[in-house]
Image (cartoon, rainbow, N blue to C red):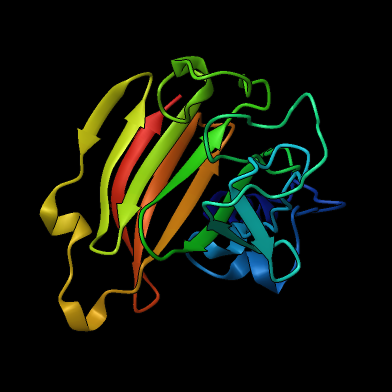
Length: 194
């Protein structure tokens, strides 16, 4: 900005149009939340032990098999699902959970059929996983390499446990970051360089 202002003071410079994209008040907000995106579950991929509710915004593991129609992209063994949205640019979203859950980012082409590592989030070079429990986030995994999260990053006092995590993907930079959300503060857990 200083360079632009200095240039405008120089009589030899001329600025006809200055276009800032993306534009709007949202982009003036500091922090990652300005990159919030709305994810949509791809119902053709949902494993039959996962029950969808709340207009497909909530997922619950159940013992009983759900009666979803057969589909070639459906995860048939592992209780996993994909979202319909492809991620581009910078994307941020938050997840609330209860119990044990894996929050994952995956390429669309991940294998969904069978009981191999190629099908399990975090166990291949196509996906990354943050594993959480009621005590908070405790490990990340990519390509079968599990990394514990330090207790100072993942733990919090029992009065402030929120069971919320955030995911930030910067496609251009090739980074994927996981955060714990505590009282609307983001606490960095781990960043993968893809």
